[in-house]
Length: 401
Image (cartoon, rainbow, N blue to C red; front, side):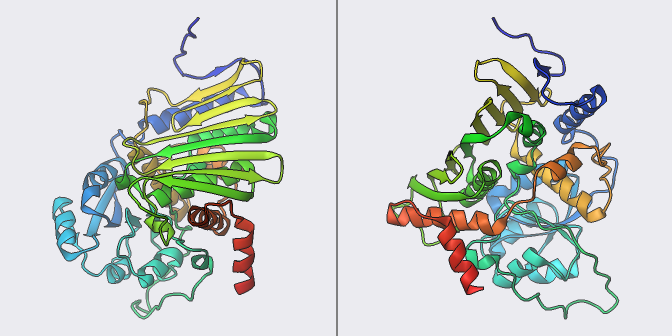
């Protein structure tokens, strides 16, 4: 018999936590807010933003300007012609020297939708940005090799006036949006102790290329796997699609990619990612001694081994697939809140007990070096046709530094 949906789309059939009714009400209010955050009328001044994008990402940029309340000070693209195209369409200034403008404009936010043709100096500023207090959000992972994880020398500061005051900006967010930061992953974090040991995980992410490269999807999936399962001992990968052979670097990955991973602690995982998936979708199935958890960007469900539903949550009135603009907006709001050092006006009730703070407390930050080591092992597996060890890549990296 079909289950009757409640007005709040929250159903619990067995008590698994000690949350008070007030805490449960707060959690649902946070979920309610996220479902409407990108459609409400903004009451605060727009965030001054410098954006770098491809022409095919113009619509994405326009949607983000509305949902995240952004004002583009200037726009840049990989070529002079495409810069004119994107800037004129977005009705903003043309940015022909991206490195100079990052320092001269000192925007509140630097939004990177692609890393195509961005040079090493620009990447150094984006990665460590000691010369600016801009927040940085990028759809693309910045480390492209394990060597990139070593901290380089700070970029030059000669462009700064002696009177400039530089405060410490928040850590840059790369490969946005991260499932690690999602509402439904924070729901799982709350019940993880009750759920018990994770034994098997299936991760499937797909998107169009305008929403990020295959390497971006892979980074998000590997980061999710690491959080759920711990360090991978061996990975075995296969890829199909437009490429005739395995690429020389991670950024060149393109098509459909599958990975099987083994772990030391009686655990296994598989990943399926694609940048030719047509629609945006992220889903994770988690199996353990206490049943099965299924989560997406919109819903969370936990069933015990007898098939009885233990817990469930969902974003009210959410579409079948949450648009990536909404998820990227969440990352932007979170990063700006860290930059401002106080709860964002766009995130009401953002306090020590809010969903944003809960996510930061219960879910540890990502480990970029270990994530890139797994991605490099996956790329190596594509070339050798054999399983490869991320640990060996990490050991070689540590010996060279």
